[in-house]
Length: 217
Image (cartoon, rainbow, N blue to C red; front, side, top):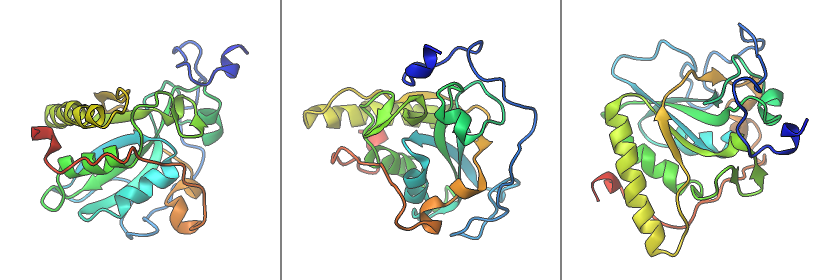
């Protein structure tokens, strides 16, 4: 297919793989590092965030290492195909982003602090790629739960763009959209760099700091 030769172009709903009505692989009951459940229900008072910042193996580790995070899981979001597999996402024919679900205690870590981890952990100016990883699945994305998260994300993007511009960097290509369905990824992807300490991590930041409180800058 022509589309199969260009993984940087988002497929339309008609072009996307059809998927299926159920998940065809198991997901671990608990987090391999934190020991907390990967799937709901989550404790009362916790909140959710979803971020896409390149290959989800390294991205997930950045968040599970953050104090105040209750659990993390990797998965797929932002595309058309229900219950996708990793191979389908890699084909470029689902439109999904590789993402990290972060469940956090807002009394211990703020959403703005998670945004700081997000911005500093990757290069948000690269469009449909992250380093050597090329394709729509590697795009930079913030999926927001409610107007407060969206406002914080939009303010932080504007402030971080000012910091990048001052440093001579390019324009941010990060998309900010309402959180869609989060489709859990396969067992072997969950906490991958804990299970494979020498495994691949393609993340690389810009070297530009994003201080806590950037949303108010």
